[in-house]
Length: 140
Image 1 (spheres, one colour):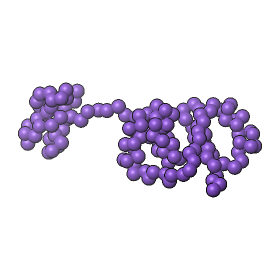
Image 2 (cartoon, helix red, strand yellow; image 1 turned 45 degrees about the horizontal axis):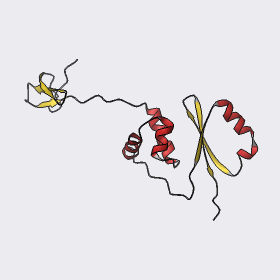
Image 3 (cartoon, helix red, strand yellow; image 1 turned 180 degrees about the vertical axis):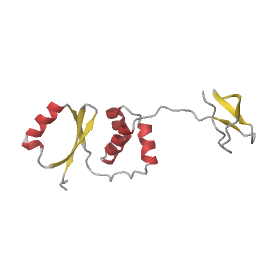
Image 4 (cartoon, helix red, strand yellow; image 1 turned 90 degrees about the horizontal axis):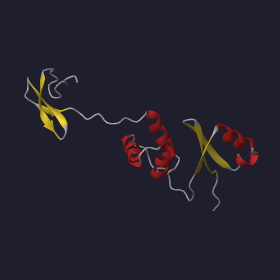
């Protein structure tokens, strides 16, 4: 393991100074500052962050996004906060979604009645495709 630089004075001369909370502590030889190295967390591919935010903007709930992408709903909430994404307007209806293979998608798109009277968003989801569909106009 390579020794870190002091976060206070950026000096390279640091020595080990015990373990606190299961993490190695260091002491800077120049300014006598004690610090712990940051814990390296499990990183999530930015592909899933973008997909989760797209789904959120389309009105899909945090829990549904968790089920679709396999990413914690808490992570999705944190990303929404981090990137300052505005909550979608509340409508009287919710979008419906389907996860389809390429063959299923082609079959669905060839039927004219499936394409009329509603808006649709298609997005790639790994080796499958997600179709989000909602009514274009809501009758009062």
